[in-house]
Image (cartoon, rainbow, N blue to C red; front, side):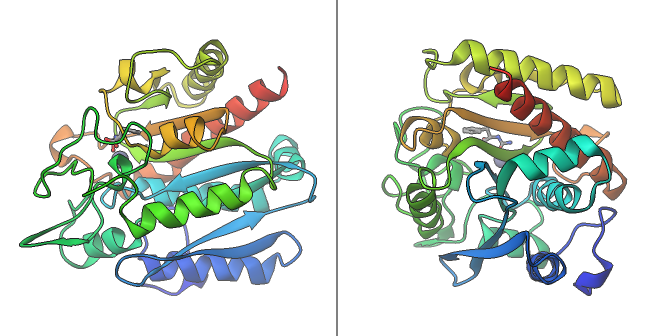
Length: 308
Ligand code: ING
Ligand code: ZN
């Protein structure tokens, strides 16, 4: 792990370095940045994030990343977005930073993230112990049609939903945070960052039934993929999660939309490596363009929703 003063988007960083960088940004921009702590994970690591705020009356956007440990591009994209909102000279970005408050939690599975640096690069779940094996897929653990489709009751599986709905501390911390803040802070947009597949997906994951605001979410998603196409030439598919990637239940996005009542909810699947053999191991030169695509899509969604 390196000194947070050398933080950049040409490398992937340890949990500790990301957290030091969040603290550093709060020291540098004390009027605009507050470091937040949702509480601790199964193994006692903090789940830290930031609130970027220009006005207490702003509506807010919530960004979550790193729920899957090995998808390193997701926390890197989250810190990129924080940095852009604080330092960009682009008047359009400055306006978004002015007009909205931003909650960004780069590592909502800190135990798993640490484990991918220290032991197993391909670990996905948290590190909860079940007899001789470990880990709940935190993106199958949310209490919304829990374990009904696209998840497993077998703790040895990569998509183990956990022993019960909302069983994991990491799930509980995020739920408590959203319940306490979604209304008070006017959180209207929820973004979960993952990799990889180049997709911009909205609810539902658990059923092919359409959400009540399907047409809006489809329209914003299409605008976001067009914005990415114009920026980098990459194709990102948009659609409901069920019809786009695979049916799956207990995801944070379905919970945020259905249970927490956050109308605009997306899960992004960012770029994978150029050689598909490498699975989740995205070359570091891809961080900057991939993170920029994620921010471009979020900007397009927020701007399209504001016009409604
Ligand atoms: N994909 C997501 C996964 O958890 C997903 C897709 C998102 C499913 C939201 C359910 C809910 O499997 C990756 N790559 O992790
Ligand atoms: Zn994922």
